[in-house]
Image 1 (spheres, rainbow, N blue to C red):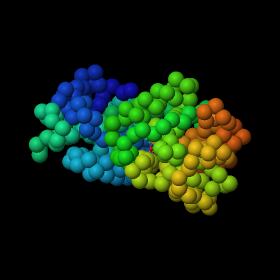
Image 2: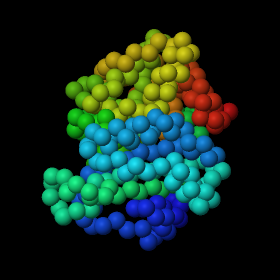
Image 3: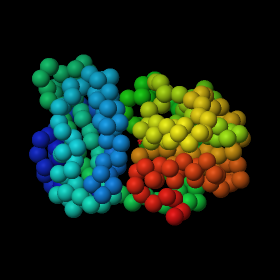
Image 4: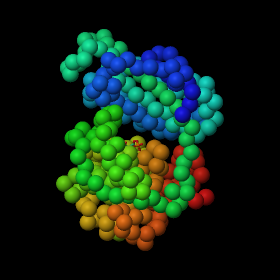
Amino acid sequence: MSDLVYLGGTIVPRRSAAVSIDDRGFLFGDAVYEVLRVVRGRFIEAERHLRRLARSLHEVSIPDPGLDLLAVSADLLRRNGLGNAEATVYVQVSRGAAVRQHAFPPPGTAPTVLVTVSAFSQRSELLTSGATAITLPDFRWSRCDIKSVNLLPNVLAAQRAAEAGAFEAILLRDGVVTEATRSNVLVVVGGVVRTHPTGPFILPGVTREVVLELAGEAGVVVREEAVGSDDLYAADEVFLTGTTADVMPVVKIDGRPVGAGRPGPMARRLGALLAERIGVGAPGS
Ligand SMILES: Cc1ncc(COP(=O)(O)O)c(C=O)c1O
């Protein structure tokens, strides 16, 4: 975590940054967020992240703060000595501070904008060896496409995974794999990559989108269709995608090996293509 943060128009030391107790992000979880990756000053897939943030804001009717987020982030990275490093940028926009009532506050209530930056280093040993996962019921709401800070179900599921010694919890809604607590889930069956279609039950992951495009360009057949729990256990490969997970092979689910129990060729191939695109070393290289 870095020392200086951007909050409500100014750059302040993290220890003195304070949000009002009336802030609707604090009281209601009435806020959306975005996480971007930065490699030596270069924002990865910035346009897609900014587009998704604008969409999240639109879907919950929080006014767009109209800030040049990349300029603010670049300044913050530089001031925190991360201008030439690998880092992540966290952006949160809440509906602002107002007298507590469920319905929206009066027009003109200023959204609260928070931007923080952190040094990032990929857990490359996990990318190489593969991660483990558990499955859990997906009891989230039906607007998982909005990147909202209402993450309690994700928090509880991630904690269950941590307690089980697993990297992620793969979520099942009515027997269908939706996504995981902080990543999307893709499976490989007979050389075909399958993943839940976009819609209300998953976050349209930026990495998922990029990896599906890279797969298509490489001639891999991709199908955005439901994957049942039986398909999950019987898959040749399972992997996760995310801004900080990259292409993370899953080698064990609920204690059962996935395929041969080690990262498979599709995850390695797509992981290498993604690494090349991001401009970082390929896993295992
Ligand atoms: C629930 C969920 N699904 C998927 C993702 C992956 O999205 P992205 O690739 O845009 O990081 C995230 C990332 O935080 C997430 O929270």
